[in-house]
Amino acid sequence: MLQSNLAFSVLAAAALAFTSSAYAAPPQDNVVDGQLYPQGRTPAKIENHNYPTTYYPNTELLGSEEMRITALGTGMPNPTKNQASISYLVELGNGDKFVFDIGYGAMANLYALRPDFAKVDKVFASHLHTDHVGDFASLLVGGWLGGRYTPLHLYGASGSKPELGTKAFVENTQKTWAWDIAGRSGALPDAGGKIIAHEFDFKGINQVVYQKNGVVIRSWPAIHVLDGSVSYSLEWKGLKYVFGGDTYPNKWYIEYAKGADVASHELFAPPELLAKMFGWDMNQAIWVATRIHTSPQAFGKVMSAVNPRLAVGYHSIQDILSTIAINDGVREVYGGNLAIATDLMVINVTKDNITVRLAIVDENVNPPGASREYLEAKRTGKATPSKFIEEGKWKEYTPPPMPKK
Ligand SMILES: [Zn+2]
Ligand SMILES: [Zn+2]
Image 1 (spheres, rainbow, N blue to C red):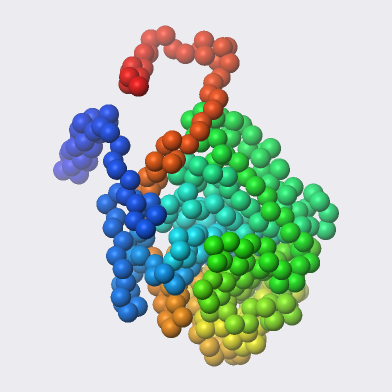
Image 2 (image 1 turned 60 degrees about the vertical axis):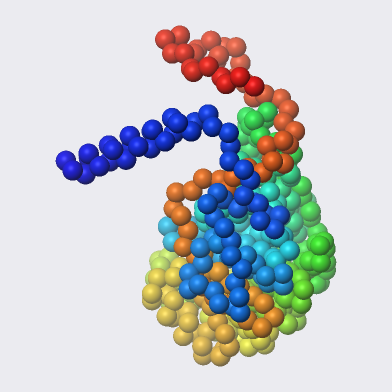
């Protein structure tokens, strides 16, 4: 009884707060260093790498030569409550933001960070498996609702035939979500609903696929199921991050990931565990773990050759048994710095320091806010149903009047 009274009074208070502010002017932009921050969050400068133990999004300013890498998804093709499918967000001290893969479930973690979505406009896809691009449409629409008023750019490789490439994926995404995109016309900025495909040759060896604002992103081939899977490096101000995507250990990664401050690479569970988890026989488990993907020992061997300041492994479910087995396997062959990634692991990187932490995020979040540019961006058309549907409106209900312009 006490509980239900409490719930009632909380609801009543919330209703009161809503009534009194429902038609109030929108709050001023909370812009710091050219980035939009959620109301009530003031980022602070971190001196001498003195980071708090936990990362609370939007409370820390990045240094002018600092990179922050946040794991948005680290698990398997079936997203779980704790681990979405693969995705990383890379934020730079110059304000640039890059998303590497956006697998199923990753958008919830990205959204929970409440970034300035106007700046989250570039995705680099390692390949077109659902566990790497499944939430792309969710970012298209969620980012558009969240503050992006310019097109979303998708960078990715060609395939063995045109219909298997990134350009076709973008065209098909636009067709698949035509109803959704058309339905938001007039309400959301026109340009925010568009996708621009940047397809490059999957065979390119350490080729530059992006260069702007002092940032250079290169790609090289990965070995994974079909042609069209790639790995990336991002270089900026002498810092280098490598995103491996999915790949069997390959010669290009060994060569071009060298010199990385943070090198990430897939790190699958050992075959015995895969057999148990998926009900496979050992033949299939060994095939998947060591011929299609990268086992802990193989990952360790790759990282021993690349020798990054920090090696990051991902793409396995982090239950205690798996984590121990994976860690033990890697440690048979690699003694360097290692982070087995889980969702919302945050890595701050500067020339002389790397700090690995976990983020704590709000579970119920609203968009970070709308910038002046977003509110003023061009909107044309107006989505409406047909006369037939309009005439089905129940005559006994009258909505409140629209406010005067
Ligand atoms: Zn894959
Ligand atoms: Zn995968």
